Length: 230
Image (tube, rainbow, N blue to C red; front, side):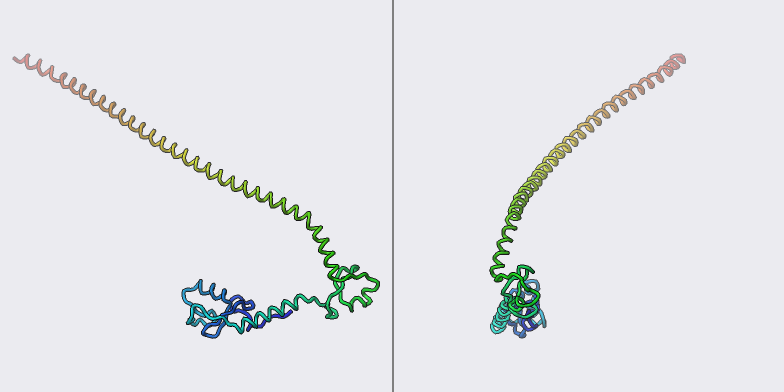
């Protein structure tokens, strides 16, 4: 498998360049990587050498772009060509006995004597068909699970809405209760103050009456003494 060199990798994402742009300091970066880098920083500096870029929209590095695209195309092409690990030949047949792809050299080897072979494309189609048949009930189960998940999500949302509604009702009820208790407290305190004033007034009147009676009692002997002397 072909691996890219450092010259073909973006210093930010460490992947093969995608739409590389060239800064005035000669460093190149993926266009999107550079945009994200500058979006998170107040000044438009190079992520490598930290020099300020003279352009807010640096030009496309066309030569590097073509080189990277050629490399990616070659890598994908090589990856699609499956080769035998023993003989480095293309895997064109499928051994039904070993259930594995083989090359023409493997087919003639002692290891596969009297084995049954099919063209790899034909075997792939057969396995694809079997896989689809196996997947059908799983798809049905997945569909049922998704429907149940939707119902669960709807139920969960209904529970949330109901809980918020009940919460508002509880708050309103307690608000009214607090208001009622405050009014009841004020009423009872006012009645207590009125009762206190009434009782204090009655005690005051009784004290005044007692004082008058005491004063009157003290005045009688003095009068009598005065009459006796005369």
